[in-house]
Amino acid sequence: MNDDQVPKQGFLKLNGDVVWQASFLGNYPVYRGANMFVVDTSICTLVDSRHFDTFGEVDAAVRLRDYIEGLSLGTVLVSVSCDAASGQLDAAEATLTGLGADVSDVENRGAWAFVAVKGDPSKTVLDKVLTRELALERDPIVAATFAAGKAAQMKLYLSNKQDRYCNSICTDCG
Image 1 (cartoon, helix red, strand yellow):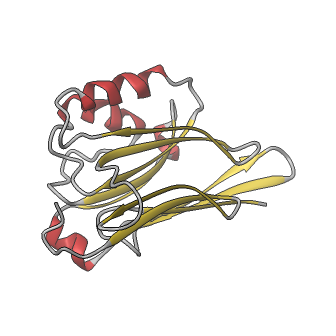
Image 2: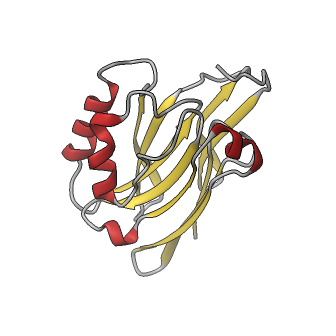
Image 3: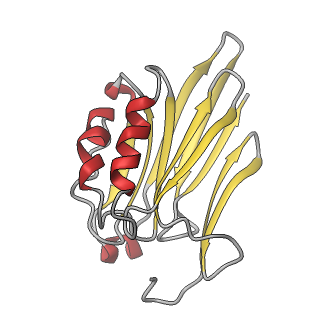
Protein backbone atom coordinates (compact mmCIF):
# COMPACT_ATOMS: atom_id res chain seq x y z
CA MET A 1 0.00 0.00 0.00
CA ASN A 2 1.17 3.51 -0.81
CA ASP A 3 1.99 4.97 2.60
CA ASP A 4 1.66 8.48 1.18
CA GLN A 5 -1.97 7.90 0.14
CA VAL A 6 -1.19 9.82 -3.06
CA PRO A 7 -3.04 8.82 -6.26
CA LYS A 8 -0.63 7.41 -8.87
CA GLN A 9 -1.06 6.39 -12.49
CA GLY A 10 0.98 4.52 -15.09
CA PHE A 11 0.32 3.70 -18.73
CA LEU A 12 1.60 2.05 -21.89
CA LYS A 13 0.99 3.76 -25.21
CA LEU A 14 1.59 2.31 -28.66
CA ASN A 15 1.25 4.63 -31.64
CA GLY A 16 -0.23 7.23 -29.30
CA ASP A 17 -3.00 4.92 -28.07
CA VAL A 18 -3.17 3.78 -24.45
CA VAL A 19 -3.09 -0.03 -24.40
CA TRP A 20 -2.49 -0.49 -20.66
CA GLN A 21 -3.14 1.61 -17.58
CA ALA A 22 -2.61 1.15 -13.88
CA SER A 23 -3.23 3.35 -10.88
CA PHE A 24 -3.11 3.51 -7.13
CA LEU A 25 -6.11 5.23 -5.58
CA GLY A 26 -7.27 5.93 -9.13
CA ASN A 27 -9.71 4.63 -11.74
CA TYR A 28 -7.58 1.71 -13.00
CA PRO A 29 -6.38 -1.56 -11.44
CA VAL A 30 -3.17 -1.42 -9.37
CA TYR A 31 -1.31 -4.26 -11.15
CA ARG A 32 1.12 -4.50 -8.23
CA GLY A 33 4.33 -6.37 -9.06
CA ALA A 34 6.05 -7.00 -12.39
CA ASN A 35 4.18 -6.13 -15.57
CA MET A 36 5.45 -7.59 -18.85
CA PHE A 37 4.58 -6.58 -22.39
CA VAL A 38 5.62 -8.23 -25.65
CA VAL A 39 5.80 -5.73 -28.50
CA ASP A 40 5.95 -6.60 -32.19
CA THR A 41 8.37 -3.93 -33.41
CA SER A 42 7.64 -4.59 -37.09
CA ILE A 43 4.08 -3.25 -36.74
CA CYS A 44 4.37 -1.52 -33.35
CA THR A 45 1.63 -3.48 -31.63
CA LEU A 46 1.16 -5.10 -28.26
CA VAL A 47 1.25 -8.86 -28.70
CA ASP A 48 0.87 -9.91 -25.07
CA SER A 49 0.48 -8.35 -21.64
CA ARG A 50 1.05 -10.19 -18.37
CA HIS A 51 0.88 -9.16 -14.74
CA PHE A 52 2.73 -10.98 -11.97
CA ASP A 53 1.99 -9.94 -8.38
CA THR A 54 5.49 -10.64 -7.08
CA PHE A 55 4.62 -9.01 -3.78
CA GLY A 56 1.44 -10.82 -2.85
CA GLU A 57 1.50 -14.17 -4.68
CA VAL A 58 4.00 -16.80 -3.58
CA ASP A 59 4.21 -18.47 -7.03
CA ALA A 60 4.23 -15.29 -9.14
CA ALA A 61 8.01 -15.21 -9.60
CA VAL A 62 8.04 -18.83 -10.78
CA ARG A 63 5.29 -18.02 -13.29
CA LEU A 64 7.21 -14.90 -14.40
CA ARG A 65 10.40 -16.92 -14.87
CA ASP A 66 8.57 -19.60 -16.84
CA TYR A 67 6.84 -16.98 -18.98
CA ILE A 68 10.11 -15.29 -19.94
CA GLU A 69 11.86 -18.60 -20.55
CA GLY A 70 9.00 -19.61 -22.87
CA LEU A 71 9.41 -16.57 -25.12
CA SER A 72 11.20 -16.94 -28.44
CA LEU A 73 14.69 -15.54 -28.96
CA GLY A 74 14.46 -12.04 -30.40
CA THR A 75 11.21 -11.19 -28.58
CA VAL A 76 11.07 -7.56 -27.48
CA LEU A 77 9.95 -7.46 -23.86
CA VAL A 78 9.02 -4.30 -21.98
CA SER A 79 8.68 -4.40 -18.21
CA VAL A 80 7.58 -1.98 -15.53
CA SER A 81 7.25 -2.44 -11.83
CA CYS A 82 4.20 -1.19 -10.04
CA ASP A 83 3.85 -0.47 -6.31
CA ALA A 84 5.83 -3.26 -4.60
CA ALA A 85 7.42 -5.75 -7.00
CA SER A 86 10.40 -7.09 -5.08
CA GLY A 87 8.74 -8.93 -2.20
CA GLN A 88 8.80 -12.43 -3.69
CA LEU A 89 10.81 -11.93 -6.88
CA ASP A 90 13.70 -14.29 -6.02
CA ALA A 91 12.73 -17.16 -8.35
CA ALA A 92 12.73 -14.82 -11.38
CA GLU A 93 15.82 -12.72 -10.60
CA ALA A 94 18.34 -14.91 -12.45
CA THR A 95 16.10 -14.95 -15.55
CA LEU A 96 15.68 -11.17 -15.45
CA THR A 97 19.44 -10.77 -15.01
CA GLY A 98 19.94 -13.06 -18.03
CA LEU A 99 17.89 -10.57 -20.04
CA GLY A 100 20.27 -7.83 -18.91
CA ALA A 101 17.84 -6.48 -16.31
CA ASP A 102 19.37 -7.08 -12.89
CA VAL A 103 16.74 -5.80 -10.45
CA SER A 104 17.85 -7.96 -7.52
CA ASP A 105 18.97 -4.87 -5.59
CA VAL A 106 15.64 -3.02 -5.93
CA GLU A 107 14.03 -2.84 -2.51
CA ASN A 108 10.37 -2.63 -1.50
CA ARG A 109 8.68 0.16 -3.46
CA GLY A 110 11.78 0.88 -5.44
CA ALA A 111 11.03 0.99 -9.17
CA TRP A 112 12.32 -0.26 -12.51
CA ALA A 113 11.60 0.02 -16.19
CA PHE A 114 13.34 -1.87 -18.96
CA VAL A 115 13.22 -2.86 -22.60
CA ALA A 116 14.96 -6.10 -23.53
CA VAL A 117 15.46 -8.34 -26.53
CA LYS A 118 15.41 -11.96 -25.40
CA GLY A 119 18.72 -13.59 -26.23
CA ASP A 120 20.67 -10.33 -26.54
CA PRO A 121 21.23 -8.74 -23.13
CA SER A 122 23.54 -6.15 -24.72
CA LYS A 123 20.43 -4.46 -26.15
CA THR A 124 18.67 -4.15 -22.78
CA VAL A 125 18.00 -0.65 -21.56
CA LEU A 126 17.28 -0.56 -17.83
CA ASP A 127 16.73 2.14 -15.28
CA LYS A 128 15.96 1.47 -11.65
CA VAL A 129 15.51 3.33 -8.42
CA LEU A 130 16.62 1.16 -5.54
CA THR A 131 14.51 2.35 -2.59
CA ARG A 132 11.12 3.83 -1.85
CA GLU A 133 12.78 6.98 -0.55
CA LEU A 134 14.81 7.45 -3.74
CA ALA A 135 11.74 6.66 -5.86
CA LEU A 136 10.02 9.64 -4.24
CA GLU A 137 12.88 11.83 -5.52
CA ARG A 138 13.60 10.32 -8.96
CA ASP A 139 11.67 8.25 -11.44
CA PRO A 140 13.18 5.59 -13.72
CA ILE A 141 13.41 6.75 -17.33
CA VAL A 142 14.41 4.53 -20.26
CA ALA A 143 14.64 5.32 -23.97
CA ALA A 144 15.31 2.72 -26.68
CA THR A 145 15.01 2.56 -30.47
CA PHE A 146 14.49 -0.61 -32.47
CA ALA A 147 14.53 -1.02 -36.23
CA ALA A 148 11.10 -1.97 -37.53
CA GLY A 149 11.65 -3.14 -41.05
CA LYS A 150 13.35 -0.89 -43.58
CA ALA A 151 11.05 2.10 -43.40
CA ALA A 152 10.28 2.56 -39.73
CA GLN A 153 11.78 2.71 -36.31
CA MET A 154 10.10 2.02 -33.01
CA LYS A 155 10.97 4.46 -30.27
CA LEU A 156 10.26 3.40 -26.71
CA TYR A 157 10.19 5.88 -23.89
CA LEU A 158 9.58 4.55 -20.43
CA SER A 159 9.16 6.78 -17.44
CA ASN A 160 7.26 6.83 -14.23
CA LYS A 161 7.21 10.61 -14.10
CA GLN A 162 3.49 10.68 -13.38
CA ASP A 163 3.67 7.89 -10.86
CA ARG A 164 6.24 6.99 -8.28
CA TYR A 165 5.03 3.38 -8.06
CA CYS A 166 3.78 2.56 -11.57
CA ASN A 167 6.06 3.33 -14.47
CA SER A 168 4.67 4.99 -17.57
CA ILE A 169 5.58 3.85 -21.06
CA CYS A 170 5.15 5.67 -24.34
CA THR A 171 5.84 3.94 -27.62
CA ASP A 172 5.72 5.48 -31.07
CA CYS A 173 6.51 3.95 -34.43
CA GLY A 174 7.19 6.13 -37.36
